[in-house]
Length: 512
Figure 1 (cartoon, helix red, strand yellow):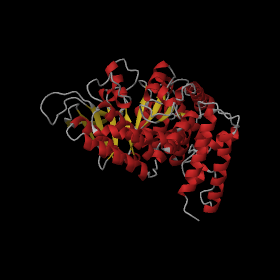
Figure 2 (cartoon, helix red, strand yellow):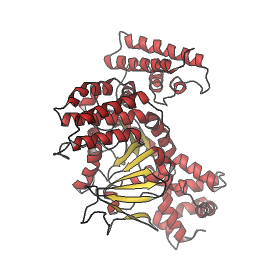
Figure 3 (tube, helix red, strand yellow):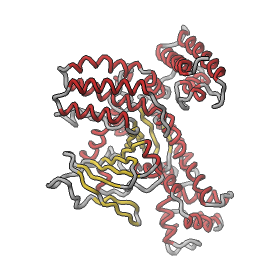
Figure 4 (cartoon, helix red, strand yellow):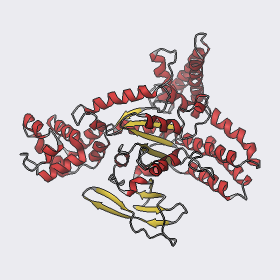
């Protein structure tokens, strides 16, 4: 993900947090919360992966990072929140609620990576339960973004599910003695089906609450992207599985329009994406051999994963390797790889690129960059300011009370926040605008990227005069739309937001 500095907003948040911290000089708990608020402004964006049990969060994390760093088996480590950060060398550390820490042994086996939480040697005497894990790993993705893998929201254990809720939406029921603040700046929510549990949890994050409807700050992270996970399974592993998954994603997005819970919904075959990122030469050779099998014979052998991997199935690939292919790629991935080789793919690098593109992970990365990466400072500042407001409100009676109006004004008035909220609503509100104008409005408020030329649909090397002319025309057009006598209130506000976005482009251009 790429980032774009917003020193004014981040600087204002730092100043307010510092002023509040001075007001709580003698109160350690609020000072600790505010210190965390200040630190997160200078750290990478925090993106949480959330969703129901077995939704494929750890597999998607591995696919996004391009390395096998997250255990995907149902062990104890998948029942706690795990933070993945960039670091010079791989390490895994367990933390208890009181801050005690212990090194975690990492084991690799035939089934992948495992974190061994048995027999932890805590640095403070006495037995303890693991509160969360922190993984440091030398990966370029983690240098720019901290990814938080969370337990399933529909776990049979209420306590396991509440660990995710405490991270993203720490309500009074979760912390009755002290205020807590959300730990993530943005959320990728994985959906296998859209049920009441998913909707309720997304509503708790804050994007669809009543408070959100009047543009006040949501309780949880501002950015939420939905992912139809394990998309290849929707079509029972058929070659057209992702087309079926895209139809499902469209249906999910339509159903979510009632409340505006996600800014986008994207189908991703995480298993295929990770397997493609780690494709081995031996596997490519196996796909080549399978591509030489007559189509009808291979179709019969692939009626099921068990049949495909059975010792008695006559195929020019050893049964053990076939079982490995089924586990790593799934039947959809095998069919896709064989088809691509039959169509002319000649080497492992080209096959990996084609499989990655067809997995949906590239589209997800693009959306994450536009919605999260390019707005990282805005999202971090929003999290810090919302947390600051929560702390001041929870600990009244100090001079920090006088900071609340300024905090609320920043949360309400910063145009970047308004753009993000509008992007979330464009899928939910039926604005009285022609389709072409809706497309232009979406682009102008940053839906395709926040660079001026992307907002204005111009080439990257466009002269400044052309940028200025186009931006000025956009200001006039969208202010006229906002004043149209037939425009309803929602449409008028959306048009004014687009006009302000165009004005922001003009303000940012050098004088000429």
